[in-house]
Image (tube, rainbow, N blue to C red; front, side):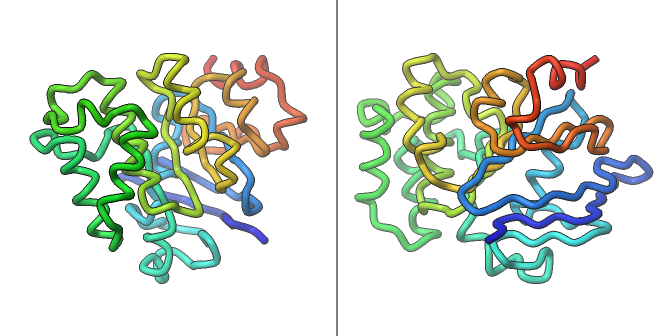
Length: 225
């Protein structure tokens, strides 16, 4: 079964084409890794799949729901880790997660479970604005997986994380989580290790779309030249 089906996707900001003629299919439980320089359209693609932006052209189906008409049917099944953490800076880590838990009808026990898993329990009462970037990223990851989503949309998920914490979050957002994932990355070798399917974007257009086994890191690096 396909978790994502995209055909002829286009999105513009005024006269500028952010995405043009993007087509792909991703099976359930598989991982798509998207590469490309800044401004290539990676974040725009994530925002469309997260139902935060409407496509201007093309067909998009996420977990069987047609976007944007059936966005309501898929929002609770998707977890987004954006470039910005999407957290309230004046609230504590615990308060942020409890707020999102209530939106999904979840008990506070789920929040405490994630705080403990991510080794954030001792800092959970502090305002997010006082936490280090790495700790904020941990809280943002907890928010993204809080409701046990089927699809994870991850923008540079290991940003600001040291190697020990990367291992800590792996069961939640890594391949072992068994979730369908779309990952935006600037790391050719690390991204390839995560991928089943690779999409390379340049100026909003697909420059590469192949199975990860048929792509090497040098080819991905060429997207940035």
